[in-house]
Image (cartoon, rainbow, N blue to C red; front, side):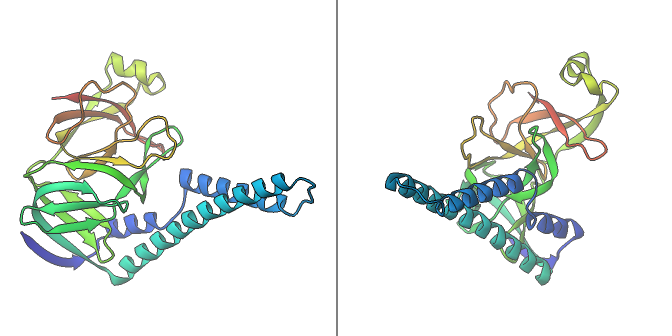
Length: 268
């Protein structure tokens, strides 16, 4: 196992800045819950002859206020954490042999080295569009379950505040290659029939399951090489997704600001 310290790269800084912003789905949820809280707060000032109505509104207001408080507090803490990392300008790089990858119960994950040392980190996840496509932005993940490729050599880039900036598995690198759309692909994305797709070939090294708050379908992220991918294909995945599985990811790259679209995943 080796450790070293170096300067943050431009990519690291962009990731940290993205984490410190509230946008997209998270921003809409924050605004929605804040407005609902304000509505119930205003209802408390409306005279009512029914004590039960006032008590009910008061309880809902307290519940919504608590929820908004913790949501906005989380945003402030993440922004502060990101800015402290940027101001420091340094990061640590650790090379370990992975013994276990576990959700730590605090929203992040623990990378357990073969010598027993534990590296507890906060995990940035790629943003998700309204249509369920992966974006280039990042948001603070709250990881409920995690599993990794035990025995693999892994290099972790960690900010001074414990944000995971980059993960590399040197012995499990992924390869990308352009390819023309097949007839099956064109049926999935008929409006983009004149585009090329990208096939990413590699071994799954990590599987992350974020905490789901009232969502019907669970979101899953897999790592190929040094990149996390949101596993929401247009065509149902036929293989169980586990670390160590060799796969081909077929992706339609976004253009002009569009999000990438995962077409499907095939076992190698």
